[in-house]
Image 1: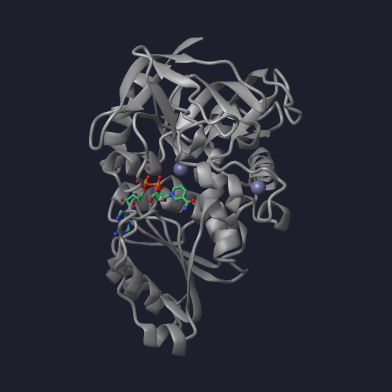
Image 2: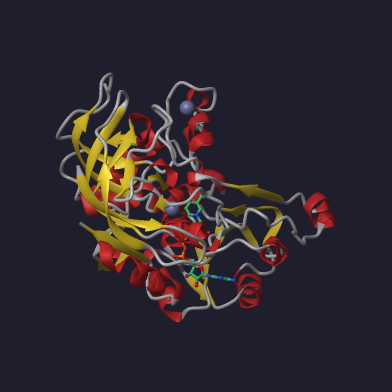
Length: 370
Ligand SMILES: NC(=O)c1ccc[n+]([C@@H]2O[C@H](COP(=O)([O-])OP(=O)(O)OC[C@H]3O[C@@H](n4cnc5c(N)ncnc54)[C@H](O)[C@@H]3O)[C@@H](O)[C@H]2O)c1
Ligand SMILES: [Zn+2]
Ligand SMILES: [Zn+2]
């Protein structure tokens, strides 16, 4: 079928919205008519080259929609089902999936390969006949996509699809960073560094897990205001300011855990964030760095003698097949805010404006609505 998509042809170039050809689902695949796609910072990492990807590539990895057609052998969804697309496939059978770590599914090895898991070919082509890769095997910067069954999670019909889309990456990643990776416990003092789509949900996760104090750090005033809407009890404009604040409100004990959700992870963030947590404290790094970033400065002495922990987290260390429906249930019951995350909506043609607004600190989550 003919549709359109936002394509990245080269580093630091704008997204180009063009007509594309989308092939039918082969065995094991599903065609989804998307309702919306979130504008996550990870697609910006493709543009800057932080995340190396084969090009040309269709962006977008935070979407939800309705199943239009299924290929042979697909059993978990059928035509008409409402689905969220998980940004990491989960097969349910590999060593990681079968030990409760679906976010680390072995199929993730093919995440940035751009070609279909099912048969190793492209499903999208441009008008010149060139094969187009898809971000995270999804390519939600298109009103229609064909994805592998392992990327598709069936949800209940009553959840608005444009809100459900957010749970395909940002909400689950942020919430899980607090609940699973940081293991926030009742009464904890938590610091969240960076209040975008991921950080806002780390704040929500910390709140739901019973944190007593949640300190949101962001240089942008609008972000600090929004952070309080999601559950932050205190805010700071910098890590230095946060240290004085955290030291003060904890009578010198410092925070239990801190979560780094800045737009880009850099080595110089680690030492000051490790300095915000107490003896036995933990820092979770959810933000993505450049692939080439290998320098980190931190006190190894404190790591050992204050028994601190530094932990990475992918997709909120969550199990998408269990956690995506669970989070949508929390939304239905009014315990998780999704509507408030979407600060501005865009058409597909406005995708570059959406990313300009993200860089300018104007959005918690910008969203393309189809
Ligand atoms: N690990 C995963 O599975 C996973 C999944 C999705 C996204 N991510 C990553 O998470 C990060 C955040 O994504 P997002 O979509 O929320 O980004 P975003 O751009 O919407 O938000 C980032 C926020 O960080 C703030 N910030 C920047 N530098 C800061 C600093 N030094 N101190 C405090 N705040 C600072 C910005 O003002 C902004 O509000 C990105 O690196 C993204 O690639 C990781
Ligand atoms: Zn994302
Ligand atoms: Zn698996």
